Image 1 (cartoon, rainbow, N blue to C red):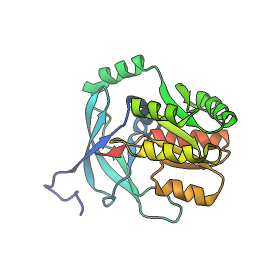
Image 2: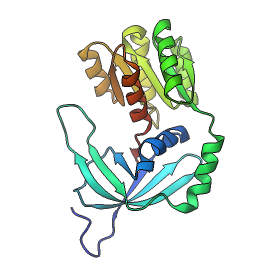
Image 3: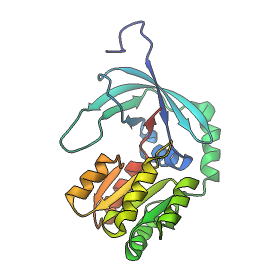
Length: 226
């Protein structure tokens, strides 16, 4: 189906950001560059779309876009979807609301799960990547409370957290709005399990700073179709 035929209205697509922190990261990583990648069954290149970007604390931002590239199923395990170029910027009427969102934003909340030394490493890395408050999941009970209260991102070291790490992944994916997750694992079998569970980013363990930085930005800047 090609939506560029004369007289046809563009397809309407609702896109959600889980938290205002996720939107602000996406705004700096993707949206300010004039487009966004959507994980969804891709439309043909050249299709017109009208996006309703639902942002916590702001509401729906309407923007018209054009599908400029698509990613089909691939052996690298990269997400299937489409790249959408904005025909114009976000509506000016939302400028003040976004400014207020930025000015009152106190940072993201990140839960890290793993051994004590691995949690310390992840906290140092996270603090260098973006403004955040990092909570250490010293026990499964603590992790469950943090996830239930709402958190922007969960980073789980599956190699040093044992069964608790696996359960944290299940809890984070099981909510009405799944929490973004980065899983660290040293062996391919565990990484495959994490991908099968729907983990947003899977990284070799232990990660370099650059690897974790890339994973954090990718996980937080990814919107979900409504």
